[in-house]
Figure: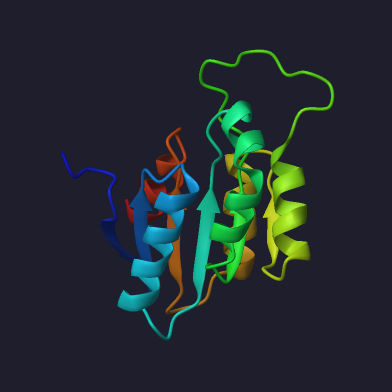
Length: 147
C-alpha cells in the first residue's frame, strides 16, 4: 500500500507534518525533493532514523549528500533491526550528524525520541515542514504531533 510513502499527516500549530518510509539515500533525495516542490517557501526539518549500521556505513557519503536537501536534520539513533549488539568503532548517528553539519546543513544527533521532541519544541516555527524518514519506528514522532 501507500502508507508511509510521502504520507501527509496534517498540520499541528502551523507545522506541515509528513512521514515517509525512506531509508535509502535515493528515497531520501526523492522525498525531500518532492517536499521542496510542494512547500517551496517553507523550511524543511527532516527527522531521519538510519536503518541498520551496515547500510549506514556502506552508504554513508550518499546519506550525507541526500540529507543536504533539508534545512535542518535531526538524526535518531540507528535502528539496528537484525544487528543486535553494537561494536566498538562502528558508525553512529552522531558521526552522520557531524558530517551532515560539516557539509553545510545544520544537523543534530538525538539520543532518543524524547530528546527529538525537546529539540523540535525549540526549533519549529509556523509554516515549517516536519518530515520523519526511516524504516524503523521514527513514524511515532510525526504521528504524535499529528494526533
